[in-house]
Each structure stands twice: as structure tokens, then as C-alpha cells.
Length: 150
View 1 (cartoon, rainbow, N blue to C red):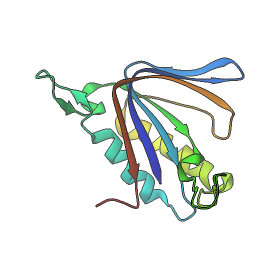
View 2 (cartoon, rainbow, N blue to C red; view 1 turned 60 degrees about the vertical axis):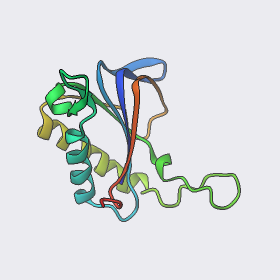
View 3 (tube, one colour; view 1 turned 45 degrees about the vertical axis):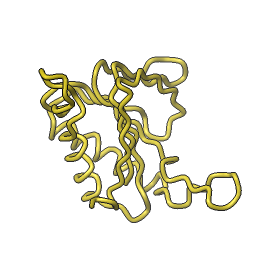
View 4 (cartoon, rainbow, N blue to C red; view 1 turned 60 degrees about the horizontal axis):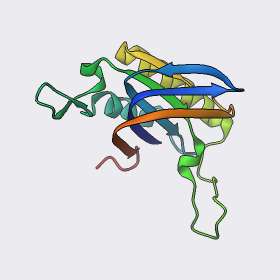
């Protein structure tokens, strides 16, 4: 599983030119699953995202997690995180889980994040054509891969 996490002052998802979801200060999280991922990958990723210290404390040091900050999270599925351009210039997505495999992971991820955090968790729509607008705060952008835990 891969994720790109951005600290944002706000972010929104539009589908068919209509606002589907919006968050204020918090994290925009793009997620993708690989063919051989399982629930343990999602669980690990959720723990990392919720506990990463990306928000400033009273001393102006990034020392607070999203849980401590009580921010919001917007989760968006993005299978292109597993794109490979080793051969030629056209990206290959062969490592990405098929929609049939990935959608249950996405649903599980969003549900588990809500249950685990008690934060305001919004999401895009799996498989939809979406427009994502965000204001990256910092800028802070972190890339995580559940296969690279060390």
C-alpha cells in the first residue's frame, strides 16, 4: 500500500462540477493498494498517518499528530501511485490492485480510520473522475509505502 500525505489548510473533492467533500486544516491522503496487499497494510498505514507529528506545538515545532491537533482528513483513492515508467514513457499500472480488489480495501481504510480516530474523516468516491483542490500547508508532503516499514 502506498500513500501520499499532505498537510493542508483546506482541501476539497469535486465530482461532476459539484463539491462532494471538503476539509479545513488537516491532512489530504492519497491512497493506493497493490495486488498482494492485505488489511494489515491498511492498519499499519492508518497508525502511521494518525500518529505522524506534522503539526506545530506551542514552541512552533512539528511535534503534534493529527489526533493531538484534532484536524480533519480527506482520503482519496489514487491507483496511479503504483505507476511504473521503467519502459518507455507511458505509465504502466500493472502493480496496482484491480478495482475489484482495491475498493474493499478503500472502504475498509476509510471506515477503520473513522473508528480509530474519532476525527472528521471525509473521502472521495472510489473510481470516480474527481477534481482535487488543496492548499498545501508548509508545504509538507510525505510518501509512505507499507512494504518499506524499516
